[in-house]
Amino acid sequence: MKTSWTDLNPGRRFAICPKYKQIGGCKYYVWIDPPMCDRSRNIISGLLRKINKYEDELKKYGVELKKCEDELKKCEDDLKKCEEQLIKKGSREKWLWIALTIAMFLVYLFV
Image: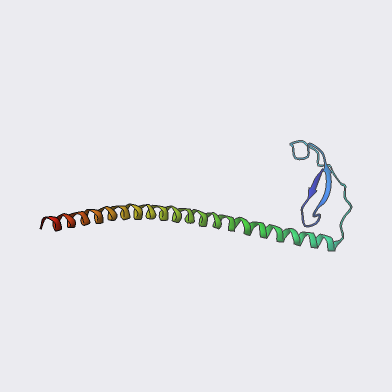
């Protein structure tokens, strides 16, 4: 049993021969569901088109979102590196101030 998603028979179920698409297979099929009225066919077809459109947009935004996430990750990594460099620089400056203070103290003692 299969379901048709064509504009003429959206959502309508039918049964086919197991060898339907094989070479030499028969073309037999029979509708299980009765035909729909025109209004139902139009509504379902329109809804299917809208769903497909929104799914395509979501896929597109998914790709764009992935790019943004990659850029954000890169920025976070760069920020982490900068923070590490500042910590190292701050540590170096601290030791330089200590050395300068000791040197000035020694100069003051010996002068």
